[in-house]
Image 1 (cartoon, rainbow, N blue to C red):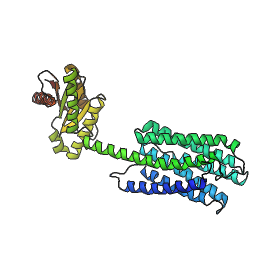
Image 2 (spheres, one colour):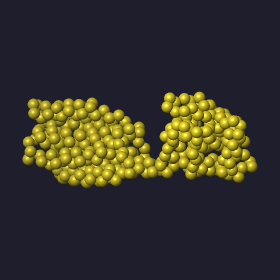
Image 3 (tube, helix red, strand yellow):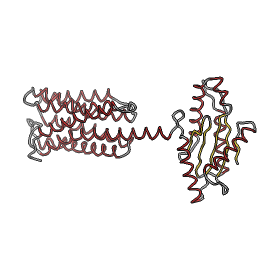
Image 4 (cartoon, rainbow, N blue to C red):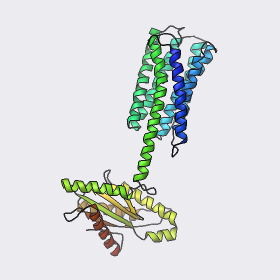
Length: 380
């Protein structure tokens, strides 16, 4: 590595960052849905590539212009990676405070270039600030991200943070006030490689996170009802079959609730279908709030919902049904009509032949609840 010219590192890194910009922009244009954070991720490697243009023009342009523009672009590029991740994970973006901090950093570096020239002070300021940015970015991904793409990005950012801190801590021992960024020194070369390689790997990490998010969106659309967000009928049956297998193998009790909103057709006829849709959405939200994390709520069809309750015997299932029924009866929304629901309850028993048979018993119980006056829970 001592024989590697830092300029060559900068040239190659700049070219790869420019290529990643084109890749990210191309992916962005072909996404099935707009995703927050992607525009910032697309611009970030372009700014990092632009910084290499200024660094490569050292001794051809005034040194102050190269220092100020190159560092400003590199800092902005790494900052945009961070802001893009904030947007991607739906976090607030404190761009005002970070912009003010960046301006203060460039002003301090300008002072140590024009009025009290000292390469060491500039290196300590810039490397220390970039370590803070990399640490904040890694902490964000560690807290909100998951999967291989986030782990890769966290490793890259943690490495960049460590190298930047090491560079800032050792500059007063390794450098002289008149040193330059292109000097043939292993530490400076490692520092240059870290920044530009991090920009490349963070672009790849962004692409992988996009891929994971798109896959999740498609899987969510395939398994969840588009109106209510509850499971689709197919996914619901898969959850029911899993509980049925657990019951047949291990004797773990489970129950099913079949819920139907009372007189839902009259709500549509009187208030209109958009209001009926809102009632279905609100009903789903109210039911989901009363369920445990392992329970499954699905839309069975129209205004009917099914709840699969694992580890729940008949008595507990009936109590759960009553809590749901009472919550729907008592809830009032200013822009929606009052409504109630009837619920049929069935618990897996020796005579059942499968999940479909259990659901059929819940349907029979629901029919009895309707015939008995509605707004009640009946178990069979």
